[in-house]
Image (cartoon, rainbow, N blue to C red; front, side):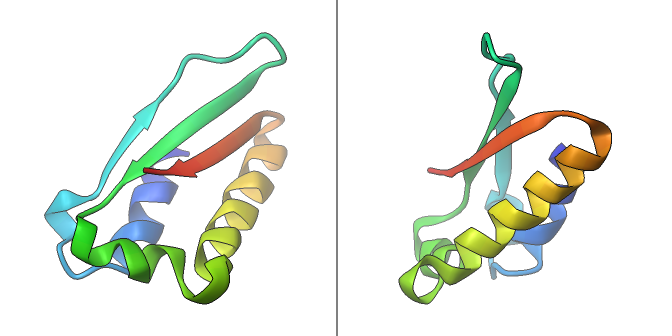
Amino acid sequence: MEELLVALARGLVEDKDSVKVSVDPPAEDGTIVYHLNVAPSDMGRVIGKQGRIAKAIRVVMRSAAQQNGSKIMVEID
């Protein structure tokens, strides 16, 4: 899952080396939180107009997680 998030983010940003993903341990309900960090200059590219790209990233990640039988949440820091 982490590799999928990194691949999605690197496809959007200019500074590909600054893409970092950290993972929190699972919460009580089994939800795993992924934190996506990018360069400040690329933040607009990842969020998109009115958050559309960020929402699309979250939908893709949730769909992939459901196929694995897990629950995830993506936060863009």
